[in-house]
Image (cartoon, rainbow, N blue to C red; front, side, top):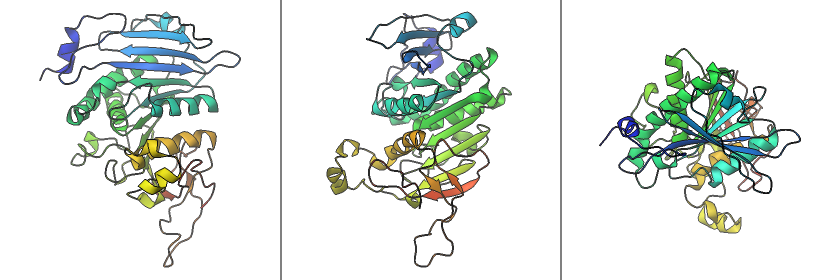
Length: 339
C-alpha cells in the first residue's frame, strides 16, 4: 500500500485538491463557519494538504457563493477569510463513515454558532474514514492528526494561538484530535482543549497513551463515554464523564424506545452517537448535565450521595479530574438539569 504522503506529492491538484489512496480515495478539507454580529452566517471550506491550504469561502444569504484560494503561508488571505482573531476557534472532527455535511457536523456546528461567536472549523476527512474500510480509517487518524497539527501551527504563527483552539472529535475524530495534540506538543505547542466524544475503542484497545487520545494531548482533555464497546470504556482524559454510569445501551436506544420516541433514525450506533448529541445540547444548556463523583447514588446500597462536582459539556471546568457520572433523559431534551 502506498504511503498517503507519497501519493499526495504525485497528485494533480485542481481548486479542491484530492489524492489517491487505496482504498478509498482520500483528502482532507476544513469547513469553516463563523457567526458574526449583524452579518449573515459565513461559511468557508479549507482544504488542507502537506503542499498547501485552499480555502473556499461562502456567505450564506439567499445562497450567494464567493470563493477564495489561499496558499498555506498566505497570511493576508487568511485574515481576509472570515477568521476573527477575537473569537475562540473550535475544530470538529466527525467519526467513521460520516460526511462533513452529515447530521453530526451540522448539529455540533449549529449548536456552537447559536451559542456564541466562534471560528468553527468542520474537518472534511470523509475520504480517509470511508465505509467499509475501518482498519484503513484507524491508520489514517495519525495522518489526519499530522495535517491538523500543521494547520493549527500555521494559525498559531499568524495570530491565532494554539492555546485558544478547542478540538472536538467524535469516535475516530477524537483519536485524530489526540494525534494532532501529540504532534503539536512535540513541536513545543499545546492545544487549549480537546473534547473526546466517545473516542473510538476498536483498533486502539491495545495501545498505550501514545496510541490514542490521552491526557496531556492538550492543556485540558475532557472525555464523554456513552458506549463501552465502540467507545473507550476506561478513563483516558483529565476528566471522564460517564453518561448513565457507562451503560452499554443508553436510555432510549432500545428498539421499542426508538419507535416510541420517533428516534429510529438513530438506530445505527445509537448509544455511540449519543455522545455528540449530548454535547451539542450542552451548548444551549451549559449547566443541564450536572455530574457527580458518586457512581451509584441511586442504588439502595449506596455509600455516597449525589452532589454536583462539575458539569458535562461545554461548561466542564479545566480544573476537573477523575471520573464523573450523570444521568440523562431517554429523548431530547436529554438534560435532566439535576440528578
